[in-house]
Amino acid sequence: MDSDFNFDYNFDGVDYSNYTADNATFEEVHTFRVHPICSGEVMCMLLLVVNVFIFLLGIVGNGVVIWIAGFKMKKSVNTTWYLSLALSDFIFCASLPVNTIYMATTNWIFGHFMCKFTSFAMFLNMFSSIFLLVVISMDRCVSVMFPVWAQNQRTISKAWVMVILAWILATALSVPSVIYREVQEHLGVHRCLNNYTTSEHSHRTVATTRFVLGFIVPFLIIIFCYSIIIFKLKSNQMAKSTKPFKVMTALIVTFFLCWLPYHTSVLIELNRSLPNDIINLLLKIGTMTASANSFLNPILYVFMGNDFRRRFKSSILSKIENAMGEEGRTLSRYLSRSSSMDARASTHI
Image 1 (cartoon, rainbow, N blue to C red):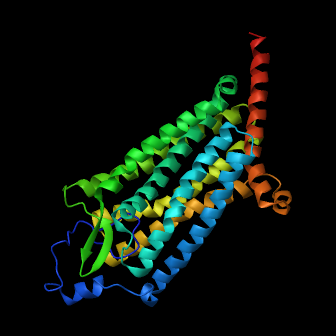
Image 2 (image 1 turned 45 degrees about the vertical axis):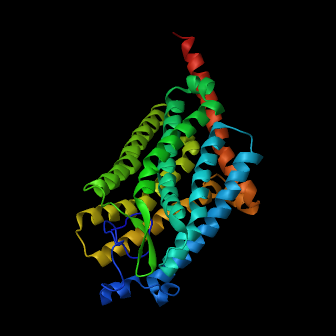
Image 3 (image 1 turned 90 degrees about the horizontal axis):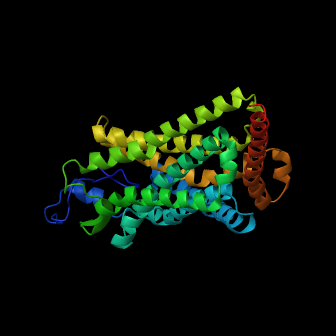
């Protein structure tokens, strides 16, 4: 079965290269025929509409964030984080039209390169997003635990080093999409699918690695960092100074809710615990919710700041700039306040 961003029937682990129209059964001919646009199927039409919606909002929203964070705002560590997240989401959204056309027609017409690239783009987005969220959580944790050191050491150049390392690791973990994804032709119809027949345990290994390194381990790190942050703020009686973490918390919760259905459906698929039709439906729903994460992030940048009514009346560009800039200003005030408190405390030692 195919658990990698594929909207049509799943034929993973089966090599159809030796099949011909002469020995095909009626069921095969019916399954593999090229359909008109969704053939009136309600679920297919719904997925088509949702993906067009995600593409439009994702391209526009992340494009605006890239423009604001990259060209309009003063460069800072925070804008570096959000620019990187927006670039990851933008790349994924840019590949959506190809998969949407494939979903609607059930015939892959874009060649081997795009078959591999679209799957690669999905997992590059997944890994880079979660790794960047881990880096940001660690940055927040260090800033709260060691405010004086953070104020002196948090630089844009170091932030970019962390971003590049996160992208390198994300790229490495996305390589299986390039290795196992291929185009196979059967009865005149081309399918872009995964072929795990070269290794007995390759499918389970790849899926488990993605679940553990792309979901479980990062969230354990994030939870650990946020537990320390909350404990530190409460111990310093500074619980009201949690504004810098609102956007970050929303991004993490959204990522969790969007990607949990996908990983759950993949684990169900590996265990074959449900009928194939139900598993296919779960994979389609999981893929759709995972895609939604890419257009929700820029919306969160806009609406998670203070004084929503004031920002709602301003322009969209001003909303995003204020929402991202507010976090940096508030965190800077917190670092400055903590530094002065530490300095005063040192005079009494």
